[in-house]
Length: 290
Image 1 (cartoon, rainbow, N blue to C red):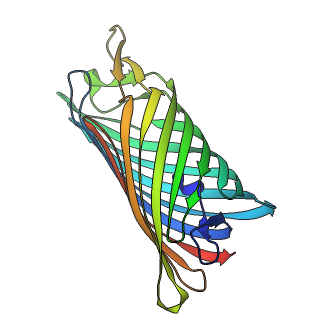
Image 2 (cartoon, one colour; image 1 turned 45 degrees about the vertical axis):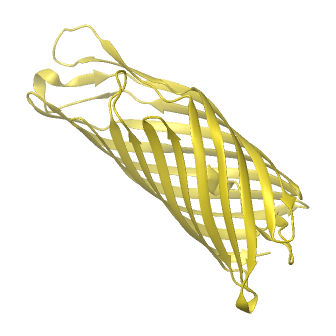
Image 3 (cartoon, one colour; image 1 turned 60 degrees about the vertical axis):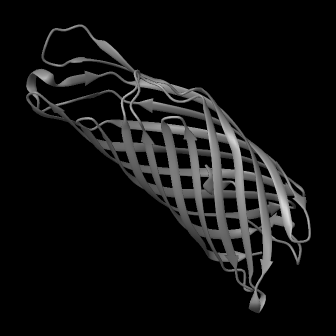
């Protein structure tokens, strides 16, 4: 969701930032890991996402934007391997009247997976599919100084995931029939960003920033019901839980030439006890109009 929330640049020679018309592309790589606990199994996720997007000022201080993205991911757990293709898109509306910014975004898509599970009788294979929709509301305020700024903001996220039912094959007695499920979650994330402006030769500027905060999650636990496909056995359920509180940290650099071409890189971390989600981003515009 962060991909759609901001496309700003400095105004004049100060640190006041304003949204503008832009078209951009970026690549994100995520590493998510969860250590095993008494109630949850360990897993690792590696995912890379290519996103293209843009936004345009449709009325004074009002901006409308959109994105299209494709992700390829791999999940590994004890005896389980899954490969996932994700196709998604989103729309964002923003009101930017410095120092205030209010943003709203919706992001939706589908996951197509190929999963293998080791059993005592070979490998059980399946093709789970899922659909998701997420929404975000952000409110931000910027305190600007000649060479630095302070930007507190808060995000409210709503996520809904629908996992379709599927059936394994290839392992005979140990093949599972898995029912579909739906998961809803809500998250509030207060954050504080500290940034600085550095004027370079030739009219270029460099923005450096660091942001820190927390996230508080409600819901998000996944309960999956399943039963053996080829044996008359009673169904059973597995629950996969998520941490309720996270710490967030991000740091980045944004280089802007005199002709308003940009290159941005960012590292972000979300962590809670046995859970860690790291992201590395590289992005640049493919066309700008300020």
